[in-house]
Image (cartoon, rainbow, N blue to C red; front, side, top):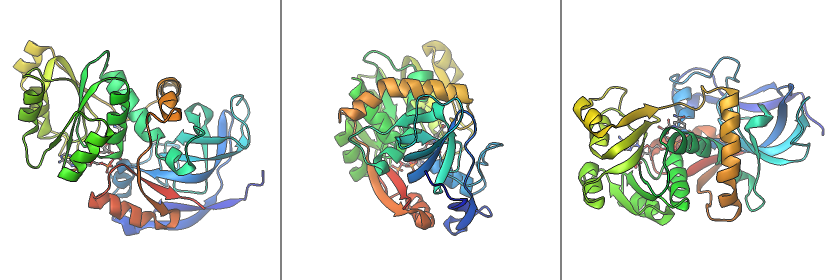
Length: 332
Ligand SMILES: NC(=O)c1ccc[n+]([C@@H]2O[C@H](COP(=O)([O-])OP(=O)(O)OC[C@H]3O[C@@H](n4cnc5c(N)ncnc54)[C@H](OP(=O)(O)O)[C@@H]3O)[C@@H](O)[C@H]2O)c1
């Protein structure tokens, strides 16, 4: 396929607000051994992109400087040693960065076929959230059998994926969200009970809903003051998995409670993990999540689509907190 020399990219020239996202031209990346080159049709917007734009989440060494952790598009080149993908394949991929562009090169082990029932825009909304939820809720959190899950930020991109996947796999899911409308949305996705954390104490609500037992796993993106309250919401041998610290990186933990109830506090960031770890997660997501998406049991939730050159407006919209589900950039 004909690949141009250079391409449109949205990059952050200096840390700051949405207006620091500017359109520049950069060379199209080369496709190394083990990689595929994708002509991008859609790029998911994720909260970590906002942290990167503000200068608080620098790209790892070797990653492109421009943001974008996930894309969907068509393969236009295949590097040496790639046997499982071909030019013309419709795919989506998890990236270390560089999704806000017309082309990206990525290890083929982080690539998945786009399910036939999905648009490219829908497919672009999946990799970052499902890799993160799978690695944290089912990996570190060891959610098993018919155990219960509490998802904070239930209407976020991550929250939607966690509610949809855990409920599709037969778990009872509780969620928190900041408005009645967001709570209703979480319930429509499969949450058994949604708690408006601005109106109600989530600890009391969880204990009331579980007969004072608590939940087996909590997926937390708040941190800070939530630490003590999360521990109060866990059942014996429960696991708290922290994936973000929007309320700060420090909190108080009752150590006696941790000992007496044998609780686990853990967490992770996906972007920093090795290529082999991401390859393993890709294989598990393909085996467990993809059939649920292909069958229509799980439907991607795209709240709003912006053209790539309006990435600043997409960031401002995400920061307004009005969205439910994912925001995607369309690359024409
Ligand atoms: N560790 C990892 O590997 C990893 C990977 C991807 C994303 N993340 C993190 O996961 C989070 C979600 O990402 P996303 O892209 O899905 O973002 P998003 O759609 O913008 O969601 C952010 C959510 O945070 C909630 N929130 C913010 N402050 C809160 C508070 N004080 N109390 C309760 N909820 C609060 C908001 O809920 P309300 O509007 O209801 O208040 C909103 O739903 C982000 O913090 C992101 O950095 C981590």
